[in-house]
Length: 142
Image 1 (cartoon, rainbow, N blue to C red):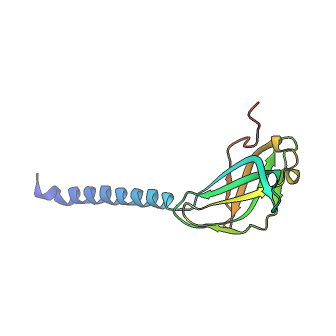
Image 2 (cartoon, rainbow, N blue to C red):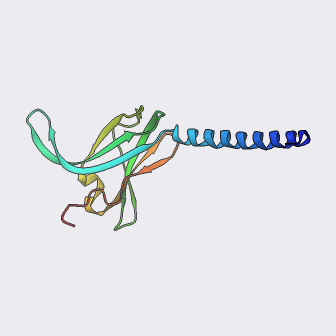
Image 3 (cartoon, rainbow, N blue to C red):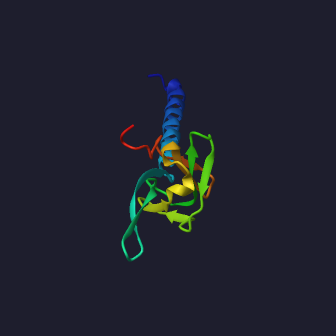
């Protein structure tokens, strides 16, 4: 190793080390943000003290990210009319911390035809939309 090449080797080492540090920070920051999982299902829910049961669409919102987020709206994308239906809920806005889940109950009449729901979405306070899997309310016979 020639002593004259030492500055070149140090420069290459510094460039590689700083590139690794930048990539590490980008990956860390991408993982260290809020992320919402949206799930939906239809099922009975007891109403009032007399135990009357009615079918509701239950939308579960779970923050699986590292940062808290505030959910401000939920809605449904319908396949037949290619339209979006927003649902107004007294439970919103709702702040969810890390690993917190919050259920929201919606009457099927507010949606229209639950079988025609392509996906459920939730919007946070920054305007970012999160979607459920496709066809979350499809019956098991299909």
